[in-house]
Amino acid sequence: MGREDDDVADAELAVLEGLWERGSATIRQLTDALYPAGTVAHYATVQKLLERLEAKGFVRRDRSGWAHRFAATIDRDTLILRRLQATADRLCAGSLAPLLTNLVRAGRLSAEEREELRKMMADLGDEPEADATGRRGKRGDR
Image (cartoon, rainbow, N blue to C red; front, side, top):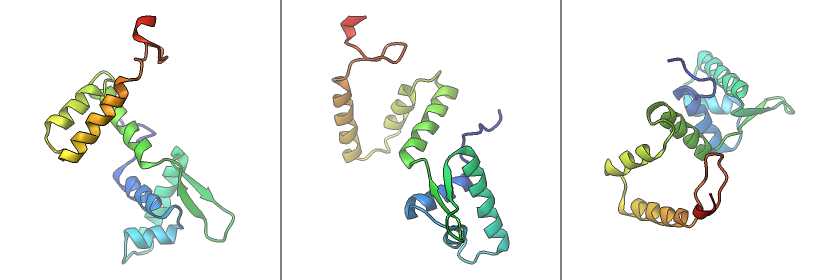
């Protein structure tokens, strides 16, 4: 199975994390953060990773200054959701429920996280279910 065009490789993720921390950065700033004793090869690597992320639409470039600045166009939560949905599509016929169930059963959630999850689920219980088209309505309306 090939890698999807909108997937983010680990090295690209490291660059995105640097941009999320800083808001925006130059290639030099990212290289210094990722490779403190970086070489010209490290600079070229970061430059190539930024070019890939830009081609995928995950990064935008500001060319107005002498040194181009880069900023992420995708936030961490959106990337997490995309990755979870891709995993659900591959392993669970698109359903997120088995993923969530296994995460909870793994026991890695703190008491505080479990309580937050309970509250979120209770809040979602008030929302009408989505039909096959994604439209929300009252359960009895269909």
